[in-house]
Length: 239
Image 1 (cartoon, rainbow, N blue to C red):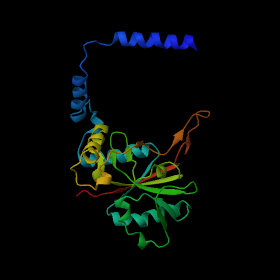
Image 2: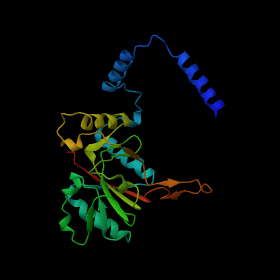
Image 3: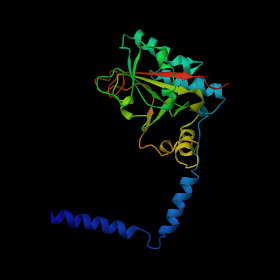
Image 4: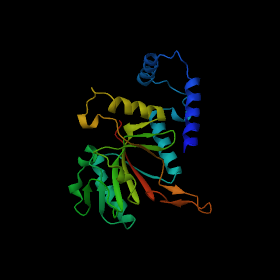
């Protein structure tokens, strides 16, 4: 044990000796704050640019390429009926665990009395879940899901079928734009959101298609580490 401690001490001593002795911690902290306040923009690929309609179409195409499915609806009021039909078409129980997100709570679920919906975290026996989506990235067809009281993380991990409500207005071109949106809406105290929704999320999940793996004999298996199917309900909320 003494030999291990001595070796560790020698390594740390070398590291300390290599550090600049005239460093100004105050200046370094100021540099970090400046970079966080005004993050530098990296190179944005061409596939992340374009007109709004082109970006939306690109998101759909990229997600479908990764084994996700998309339904485009003209009105959020159509969502309960679409969810009920989607579950029935796949012989799934007419039960749903849903995130208590304002966009989901406001939907007319009472119009579908045959569909049982429970708002809250997922249980191990839930076959399907529905969550809202903070943003989506056209560049790769990726969903940006944030954790919080209105979005339990288990809903995106436990059920075999994961349905996601996405508003077209939340689709951005590049990943950098998604982080900009997160900083603006959740990292500032003066935005028009309830206080409990202005805090930065503990977890940000980037989801591109259903869970899959080809580790076993190079055979693609869906649902390896999470949902077997990912279905995005895209509400066209732009004029």
